[in-house]
Image (tube, rainbow, N blue to C red; front, top):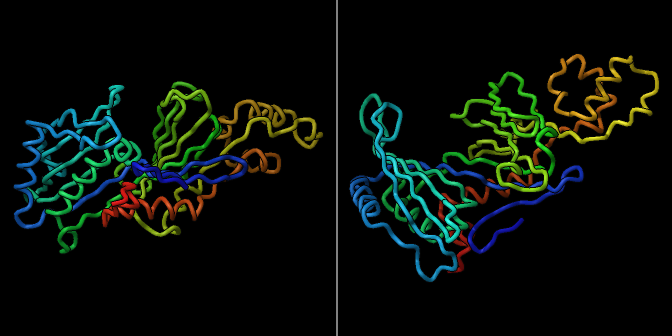
Length: 324
């Protein structure tokens, strides 16, 4: 586990000889404005759009608020006032987060809000500004009748596997599956409804980040729930290891066609997902060391979920690494 000065959290753990990294990739907050709270907030946001606000000058990072983009939506089940806060560092790298104010329903306008951001980027690069912003938002909000409070609606649990993209498979079962594929290594898989908890994404993180080593990322959208309620989302995950099948050790127990299948799997593990369930069952004795069912770590989940839950109270020490 590590928590650096700026609040970026990760949990590292070994699994089957692989060094896995767990983290919170996105947090969604929601809340309802207390009586009379929405007007001052909209007024302050209007000032930000006009003048902008520099990050505190005594902070060691070079990030500052560069732009506040604003747009409106009037469709039912959408936020009317939408803000995107953009920060830039000296290398012109952009960090942003989203705020929606006022929800449109069929019955009218509801004084609620929604915030989305990646804590590993926002807290690392503009943590002081994000802290002050969330405290301001919390001060004019209520959740369940409690004033001065916010709610963590969901978070994305990310797990990084130091293997090639074609070595991570997911048995979707009855879940909806969308695939964007350009090659065996350049592909992104989506499972489930993206608007609901349990939505799963698997992609080549090394390709996205320009890394020279293998790295595949799994992201699952979860609510702050107990371990037993979420672990079934990970049960379909399989990690394959190249070169685990030694063909000379198979003897003559397999038909020639099946031997060819196994040889292809040894070179192209992504082909496993194309076989029928009956064929996979026939190959199980030979694939037990080749296909490794993933088991979600109880300790890692509790750490990341607990770190995320700290936002409910805006625990400055545990989230932002602030000693004050």
